[in-house]
Length: 219
Image (cartoon, rainbow, N blue to C red):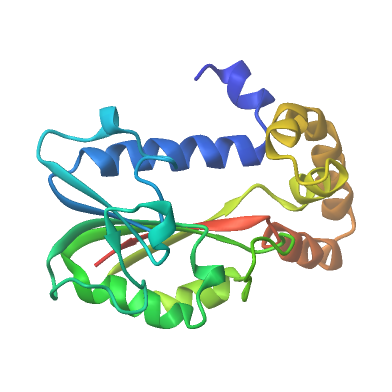
């Protein structure tokens, strides 16, 4: 990425680029790769050509109708302790009655040093037939506290959230228009900085109000 491309990209595009790069690396790792709640195999971020030669990919979903490799419940994974090397769980935990139990199950089945990459919503509309939860970064740090290394990063920022609402939560359109919001973002940040400590406190709160979060956790 050139410096100009980095400048033109809004935070959401930058975060999405980093997420995809991390998943591409995860997919190359040897061993068992679980795509939790992935539905039909390879319909999400992971493609067959991304897998390493020694990677064994399995999609797990509770819905038999979507033809996953494994029909199972993320709150009771059908795997032995410390038998899985990598986990992807994107846009799933908000639909689970007990998301903490699902996180605990990921921890249980992961080998020491195994990684779980998890995407969840925060400021996002109700979606799908059943939608239980939204997650703050504070909640996610607590939920993944058993993991050795946890990095919680935002998906976009509050201005991107506003753009999503204005475009009817059409992600491709909001992404394409995202760079147009950079001048507004800079102006608001300058205004809050000039407002002193009160503005800085408000800015910190807004910085923790994205559309969602990506969790990178290592056991």
